[in-house]
Length: 182
Image 1 (tube, rainbow, N blue to C red):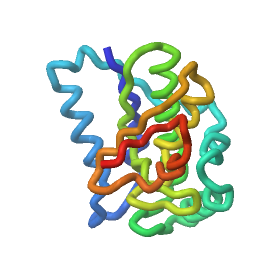
Image 2: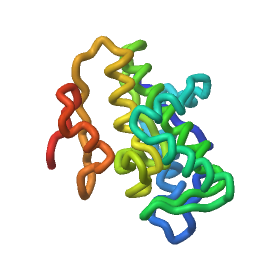
Image 3: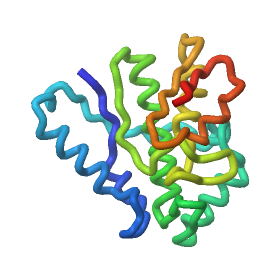
């Protein structure tokens, strides 16, 4: 059994019809999993909303940047490099962080493998800037959370992309988080 953490709210982060990061990326994966031969091996979970996710985000991102994202979203539009911000983006990005933290909880507290299907994606965002379609660096936030709550000493982040996850560079001198160089 594997837990997949997903919400249809992730589809509400709008990037514009010409942007390469689209909601259909998730709907195609979800549809395929639900109709696959392993569908009965999946426990679908909705991300929680009860934790103080801003506190967790502030461990990686500056308060100024978080407020800038919130402001762009409230006014209905904003852009950091290739990362679009729409009216629902701040709320959806916070939900994505919650989903990643739920994934950590599922692995460490329940002992079950988990996979998070979320958008916007989350490994390129820098401390003070969205980048690479990412608003928050979910990977770094989840790694720090895992080290804090778990009985683990190290975390590995496998960054499988065309280029390295700039957001995970925060760990370049961190001895408890391992990031292989591709």
